[in-house]
Length: 196
Image (cartoon, rainbow, N blue to C red; front, side):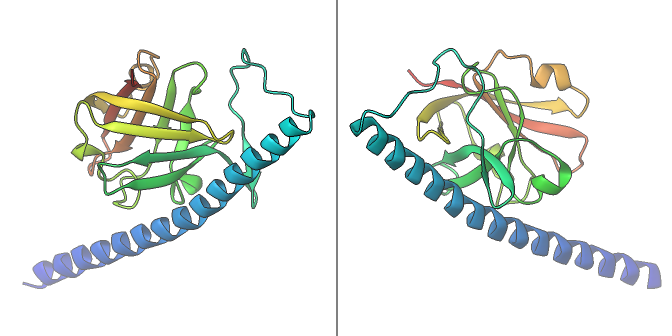
C-alpha cells in the first residue's frame, strides 16, 4: 500500500514537472518568435530601402550557408509554421544543444539552400509534441532570416531509432522534422519535400 502511494505521488510529481517544463518552453519560444519575426521584418525593410537607394547587393545565389542572425545572445535561422497543428509557429535556432532545445526547435543539420535541412525539437506539446498528427500532403512553411518563405509538403512519416543518425541526415528529403517518442528510444520523423 505504501509502495503504491509512493508510486502515485512520483507519477503526479513527474506530470507536474512536465507541465511546468512545457509552459516554460512555450513562453520562451513565444518570446523568441516575436524577436525573430521583428528582426526579419526589419531586415526586409532595410534591404528594400537599400535597394531603392541603389546600395543593396543581394546574397550570392551559390552560397549554401543560411543567414544566421543573433538576437539577444541566441542565433537563429528563421521560423517554422505548421497550420495543421493549430497554426503552430516556432523560432528555429541555428545550432543545437540540450539547453537550447528546452527553449525552441533547433537545426540539427543541413540547409534550406542544399535541400537537406533537418530540424529537431522536444516533444513538448508547445514544440514538436504534435508532429504525429501530420500526414502526407500537409503543408509546412519555413521562413528564413532573409524573409523568404519556403513551402513544403509532408511526404511521409517514420519512426527511427535514436542511433539512426545516417538515416536521419541522408539528404533524400528537402526538410525533416523530428522529436523523441515518450520512451526516448525512437525518433518520430516527418519527411517533407518542396511543394510544387
